[in-house]
Structures are given as structure tokens and as C-alpha cells.
Length: 406
Ligand SMILES: Cc1ncc(COP(=O)(O)O)c(C=O)c1O
Image (cartoon, rainbow, N blue to C red; front, side, top):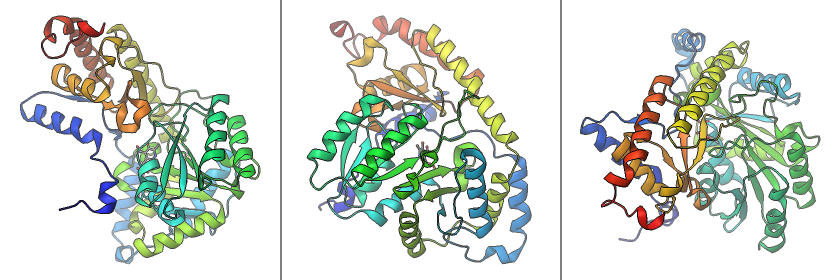
């Protein structure tokens, strides 16, 4: 029987192949160190959990909630933008709560895309940026990720040669998976370009608070004067407050786009469970100490990873933000491609990573290492990788032909 039209547009998740290997290795007793999925391992701060427990006792909170977010939650998100970015938002018309930023992004795609619309999307990138639009009938044209002057010539060409003219440009800084961080000057150029060519800009700022240079927190594209005319930005509670399972995020910005997303969502969901929305409000209105602690944990893990992996012969450039390192596959193994290399790491080094190809074809020389294991486990992973790399020539010659590719 033929595959359904939409399902045909969704290739099997690349990460699934590594996950399957990981599960079978674990079933066989292996202690796999999992640097694969970006699933935060830190507990949600106690005050947020306590608030949830308190509110859930009230039966009135057990009814359907508000799809666009309860007013206090939207006000708290507007206050966060004012405090953190100096951006003034109307919580009634320019803020909508989403069931995580992933859901928000996918439903924004549903709301604005007509079949065949062209979307300019970074490559490599977090998969929903492309697949949200592919599911909505859009067509993807890949853009580069580096937030510098090299970004614009391909963008110019795309606008000039795409038919129909592109509808939207997706940006994601700090970037998953590459950890690039954009400057406000870069954003100014993006907005000027978008206005000139009547492009919608969708910015994914999921890592707004996971940065390591205290003097340079990542800006919001909405800080650019007039950005709100063309732009919506997505943020997430998942990483900032270690709340990935709670499913809470936001879209903020242009009223027409926010209204379109709000309308689609009103047909699809009743919003997050009210106690979750109240606890999220409490989190956003907090004093920021929990966020600083989360940053410190990731920073220490990053430093341990860069140091120990480097000494093990696997160079890992230090990311300036996000909870990921984006590392080039050691030369000797690069010809294998990222999926085969990732499988080898599970099988021979008991370490799981995310193959770069899972983020797009431009990612195939890389793997992504998530900082979701503690420092001790990261050191253990480095020791294991060191052994794997130093014995590969002897142990792998009949598995893969390494010598031929030197
Ligand atoms: C860039 C980016 N956007 C969005 C998400 C999804 O976040 P949420 O849990 O809010 O759906 C992730 C999660 O890894 C991400 O890396």
C-alpha cells in the first residue's frame, strides 16, 4: 500500500537509528553515556514544582485551560522581554503561549503556508524548522548558518531565483546544532533585508538563556527597531528552567502572525494544563538565580568536555552558547559520514552522539554532543573515546577500511 502523502515527506528520523543501537547495547548490559538527544537532565527548580503541586489541588484548575495562555502567563512573558531585551510587547495581541516552542513553530507553519510556498531555512538546523513547513506543504531552500557577511549573498540569490518568491526566512541563534550566536548588527541587516524583500522572519530563540559569556547574552531580533513589522520569535521554558517535559513555550511579535497562530491553535488545543501555566508564570516572574545556576552547570560541563575530549584526540570547539558542542568528525573517520561514525561510537566506545546528518546534509562532517551528562560521565566518555581512537587501526581494520582513506 502506498505511503500517505504527508508521511512520505517525513523520512525516518535519523536519530532513531542511533537510538535503536543504543537501546540494544543497553539491553545487552552496556553502560552507554548518552550525549545524543538535547534532553535536559537537570531537575526543574523546586519552587516551580511546588507551585504546580499547590495549584493542582484546586479543582477549578482541572477544567480546560486557555489555548492562547492565561493572561498572567502572557503578561509574565511580556515582562521578561521588557526586562531582558528592552522590547515592549502587548500581552493581549503580541504574545501567545505554545505547548513548547516546537509545537508553536509547527503550527505557525500550518497557519501561514500555502502549498508550494518557499521557505528559507538554515542547514544544518533543528529538524522542525524544515519539517514543520514540509508538513504544511511548503518547499525548503537551504541557507547557510554563519551569522556574518557570508550569510547574505546566498540569501540574495534565493530571493532573486526562487519561484514563487520566498515567504519566510527562518533564523535560529544561538543555533542548534552549530552553537553560532548572532549579534544585534547581524539582526539589523536581516531585518533590513526582510523588509526590502517582504519576507516574514521567524526566529527561534530557544537558547536565550543558555550562554557562557556573562557579558554578552544573546540578543533578540525584536530589539531591532521595526522588527515587529515582519517578525515572530519563539522562546522555550524547556532549557531555561529545565522544564522540557512540561511543554511550555511562547511566540511573540507581529500581531498579524500571532493572530494567525492563535487562531490555528484555538482549533487544535485547549492550552497547557492550568497548573503548568501558573507554575510557568511563577518561573518567569522569578529572580533569575535558578537560570544562572543552570548556565553554570552547562558551562562547567562544556569546559570538561572541551578539555578531556581534546586530550583524547577528538577536538571539540568550545560553544559560546546552547547545551551542545558541534564537533568535526576526526579526519580518519570523516569519510564514513556522521551516521556510521555515530553508530561506531555506540558500538565501540559506549558513547551516543547525534549524527550531524540528522540536522541536514550540510551537517554530515559533524556530530553534536549534548551536555546532558554530568562531569564525571563526560570524563568517562572521553576516556572511552581515547581508547577507541587509539586502537581503531588495530581493531577496526576488518570492520571498515580506515587505511585506504588516510
Ligand atoms: C532550536 C530549538 N528550538 C526548539 C526546541 C524545542 O523546544 P521545546 O521543548 O520548547 O519545544 C529545541 C529543543 O531541542 C531546540 O533546540
